[in-house]
Image (cartoon, rainbow, N blue to C red; front, side, top):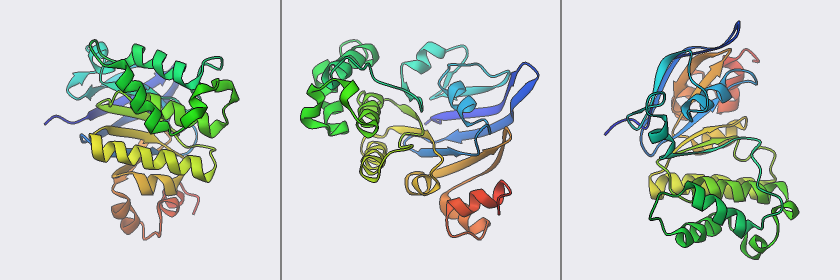
Length: 243
C-alpha cells in the first residue's frame, strides 16, 4: 500500500526568504499526523503545499501516489482542507451550507442527502442547523466546518488548528470526532495545532518544524522518552530553546 503522504526534500522560497529548508516526512494511511512548531516556523506553508495550493520551489510531494504538481487535480479529489481562519457563509443556514458544500465536494453519483445527514451527525448541532451561520458561536461554526471537511470521508483530511480558541466542550467534540473518523473510517489526518496536549492525545506521530527545518519526528511516547519530558509541551519547549 502506498503512503498517504510522501514529502521529500521540500524547499519553499518567497523571494529572498526561504520558508522551508528541504524537509522530508511521510504519513501512513489511516494515521493522525501532527505538525507542530512556533509561529512562522513553516507549518502552514507545508500544509498548503500538501493541499496543492502552492508549489514547492524544489522537492516533491505524493498524495496516495499522486504527484502534487503533475497530478494536482487527482490529489484534490481525495483530500479536504480546513484552514485555521475558514468561515461558513453567514446568511446560509447550517443545512444549506452543508448541502451546498456537499454538492461541491462529492464525487459524481454520490448520495448528497446521505452525505449531508452524515455531516449533521458529525457536527451534532441538531435543530441549530436550521439557523443561519451568522447566529452561531465560534465553537458551533468550527464544528460545522469540521463536519464539512469530514462528511465525504476523504482519503486525507488536512486540518489547520481545528480546535483553536474554543471552549472545553466544543474542543472536546472536535477532538473526539477527528479521532473517531480516523479509526472507524480510515481517514488519514494531517493536523497542525499549538495545543500540545491536544496533539499528544490525538496524534499517532508528530513532527516539529522550527525555522523552516524539521527538527524531530516520532510518536509522542518516543519523543517524551528521548527528551526526558512528561509531556509534548515540555518536549516542544526544550527543542525550540524555551527550556
